[in-house]
Length: 186
Length: 443
Image (tube, rainbow over all chains, first blue to last red; front, side, top):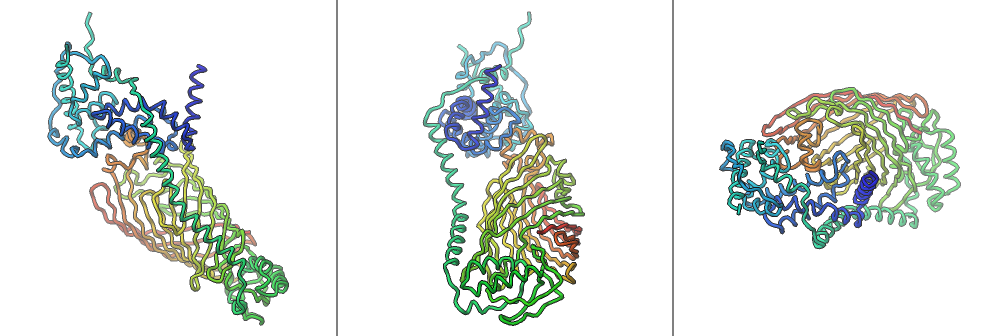
């Protein structure tokens, strides 16, 4: 319990320092949350270099807007939202974004054809490799829905697509992911 | 035993639950460098402010070391307000070369005791008294007796100093939409009288505080928050506190005020306090800094004030032009005439920035981390609006005693606007009128 309280005190001190622009506190914040945030960025980006770019963009935003953090939610949760938004912004800026979802607008979600015997990834690295093989749009929707727990309505708003497109993209992503995992099964 | 069906979502979620990837020193160096650059860039906007202050200081320094030409001593006194007299005391003592200091000081002391109204006159002769017009400036010394003013100093050039110095204002607006109540306290006490042959800067420095109680303000047609009070929209009363530094430059017969005002808003929202820094810069090229930016260029000629104000609040810009004229009917009361036009354009995104407690927008705000309220997903519900309005007002004031003044002003006008809620264009015209009751306390 005492450790927990100390951790919270340290965190408050860290936040306070960052608000004041203390470089030492900023670096501590980066060291503490950077690895976790890089993992999040990596899920949304197709390679580690892009993920590092997203990490830097996200942290610049975090450090510039930490004064607006009111403590309504955990700092990590707040930061995660910022990094997800950063990833979405980068995704939108990509030249392929405009036509990325156009073919899927009216597709109904396909039936769950998951096979109980299909192989599961046993490590995050394997899971990332599988995600890398998905088209960017599929990966984005899968990440937002399956891992972040957003609703299709929220995804549609965030990506400026229809709710139906989000659902169909997710169903296709899920199906393709299963196929990838089955193929990679030894 | 039935084996539970594997869940691919759950599997991925668990795999990435506490997953981390090592960050490098190069990552931190890149982040740190960008943050420092941005911080340095933000301060660039203060450079004009600093330059302006330096310029004002230079003028002050220059003025203090400049002796007047003889012609400047022969200026005549056309208007004489109590406030002017008060400030002349300092002038006379600081600049004995202007005139006979002892004579000026003595005459000013006489005037102080006898509460002079506005007078006119020529240098060296007894001025005439305008019994029908009185100044309402802040020192509250206008009175019943008029005495000749033996004043040979350059009070004409200091006439613009007849600004309200200290005033407490309690306002009550009665209208829809309107602010309900406001209490503000303003102190523009000069810290040093200034003089220059080229420019006549006037420095006022003091706190400006205010309190806005809940407002009833309708949103535009088509907005989510139309007809809702600020409380319903998740807002709350707010306080403002700050300081300002101003000086005035005479341009012809008018005086242009400019300066800097900086302060802080305190807004209790629910159980939290929301701190917003407000930077107000007068007559500088504006930019959209976090918080509010206000450009305020009041022009004053005798007791007539014309105020041009440009305000930019995130994505809004307003140019109000207001003219106010007070005419004293007798030492205790008079009438107030007011006219104004206002051109405004603003755009906002309903939802995150307006009503964070609405279910849908609240989730969007959470999703957006509370800082991306104006991003594309929310821009679907954006509203932009052009509007212009003109109004005229007429009222009266009554001095209750040496400190308190009651003033009522009825304003009426028409507002024309063009609103763009979402994808639709809506034109609108609205007549409005409100009664503005004020209790002014000066001392």
